[in-house]
Amino acid sequence: MAVTKKDVEYIAELARLKFTDEELEKFTGQLNEILSYVEKLNELDTSNVEPLSHPVEGSNVFREDIVKPSIDREDALRNAPDRNELFFKVPKVIGGE
Image (cartoon, rainbow, N blue to C red; front, side):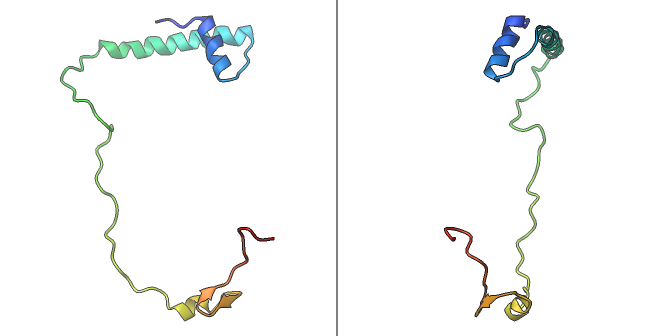
């Protein structure tokens, strides 16, 4: 299947791009080269290849969820610029003036 200059113009219109005639000729040639390269894949015998949902088989790479001691609340709040009893106090950022 060859790409024509008209096809490239149509694709450019869909992408809201404007090209000169020289650029349209260039892209037409480049797209045809790409398609001819991809067409070579049809020459491969893939009858014994099972379809894949993903090209790389992976396993769970997450670490175990282990409970560890955390920093003490007083130590965390010690250097806070402003606090409200047990919590950090920050400026209102939603719906504020």
